[in-house]
Image (cartoon, rainbow, N blue to C red; front, side):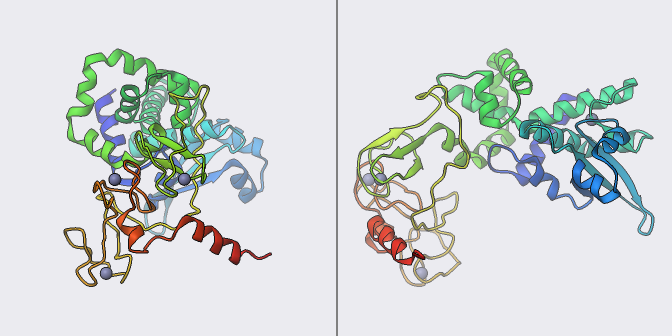
Amino acid sequence: MDYDFIQRKVYDLIFTFIDSIPIDPFSIVSYFDSIFICSYKEYSEYYNISEDDVIRKFNSNEGFLLKCKDTSTNTNYYIMGYNQNKSKERIRFTIAHELGHFILKHNDRTSKNILNRYSLSDQETQHFETEANHFAKHLLIPFPIALYFKKHLNRFTAEIISNIFNVNFEPANYVFLNLNKLGDYSKKYFDSNIEQIILKKFNKSIAKILYKNRCLFCGHIFYVKDPKFCPICGKTLLLRESIDDIFPYFINYEDDNMIYSKIEINENHKAVKCPKCENEHIVEGDYCQICGMHTVNRCTFCHELLDGDARYCHECGAESTFYINRILTNYEGYNYLGKDDAPF
Ligand SMILES: [Zn+2]
Ligand SMILES: [Zn+2]
Ligand SMILES: [Zn+2]
Ligand SMILES: [Zn+2]
């Protein structure tokens, strides 16, 4: 099996479609017009058969990829099925696995129309199964990102990988053991371009896991390395919440609060449109060329680059450029307005 080829295919996909963890295989599948995805339940309802019939028909309890031909246009399309009664982690792995069959064009390399998970039999099928599993592991747990966590966390175990990437213990442990074996070869994953690009793309998502802080005064959750002040209320009552500080720690990807107004910024810390006149042609430098407003949120004292919702600098506590220009409201004022709008 050409592992490097498979890995390359995986990174191409991630590079093109995804910028956050946990990797969402459903969203990748949705980009391919020729794949129709359905649960066993939906399939059974459509054909008016039982779910057990679906399992028997495709000879798999987990999922399948069925190649079909549209005779009117003479083009191929695919039906991807998954058993919705399995755990979330297992379903994610199944979708990634079936996507592997699709991307690696296994259906075209065999006379069979159906590729099903764990059906096995002859050598050919087993070979495809191994390749699809390899594909799924690397897609759900991209090595460069896992390696980055290994370097930046004090504790790094298979359980932690499983928690971060939303996968079962088995694939997590596979990656854990392989990363340990990698040793000095891990340089390889950082030297080549694509790995650097992937890390840059996932920057925000990685920071969410490594540098999570909660303000005990206003409740704001934000992701900055070693902050001294809350960017919303400017207070210093901060609690670090990371895998290194709390054990056992379970990442809650939903634990994000959006209660404060914010200006959307891009990866270069620039507003995507002018926060005052809404001009969308943002030029070099810190200011809008139409109205002269700040398009970059910076600390007015130490000039640190700040998030789009920061009223205060997390380093020195001074006010931000967006805040002193009244682009961002005072957090108490915001709460007050919020209460006024409440329907009771
Ligand atoms: Zn398979
Ligand atoms: Zn606060
Ligand atoms: Zn402007
Ligand atoms: Zn500052």
